[in-house]
Image (cartoon, rainbow, N blue to C red; front, side):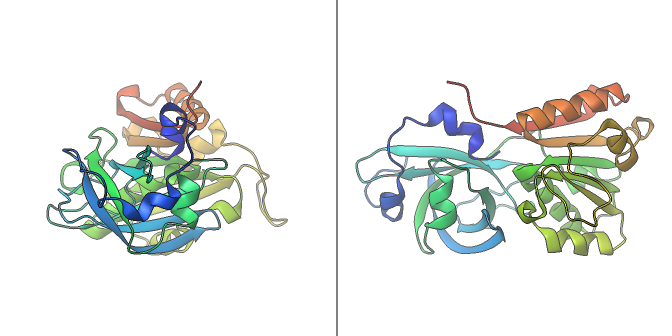
Length: 277
């Protein structure tokens, strides 16, 4: 999930909590379920996306594909809460480091602050992990082919699954189809290329919807049904399918998968987008 998933639903139009972010945990009591995390690292993933490394002392562990809630509080008491997918692989209880990759949402209330201004050493409230459906576990799910379809920052939770596979030394066949606007918007570019080069059963295809280079074999356009059939797994193999991205992407891909004969019960989706109203 990304900021856009909750932007419309939770925004009250009050100014963002940027000025008060580094005062969290000092002024307000932390309700049950929330705890204080500290930003201990960050790295750029694209011109508009950053991975934040948080130290969460009482983190209970998580599975690949789960998400967490972050909450910022301004000095006047106004709070803004957003959900973000966990980017790192699974963590056991007692592991305190978690990572989230945050895409700056144009005119967003929280993501511009977290991407551009949230300084190292700052505190933020954290709650999670959340979700038990959109997950992949190498202990219980290994062996069944996996098809991952990601639109934009929908790559984050499926990348957590890819990392879980790598960290477990698992060789379950994985195929990833990544749809993104331009080459500049891609996430985890070098890591994905390295994983593909290992030749251990992980394959990835990237398509661009807005702009491509002059030498590209394919023009900029959305994923087609024929491309999905060519780069995905056939339904006869009964793959486990995970689809994450903007609502339009998820709905279009899910329709194509079902039309191609994939069992809807084997398709798991997670979507995000501005809420109405």
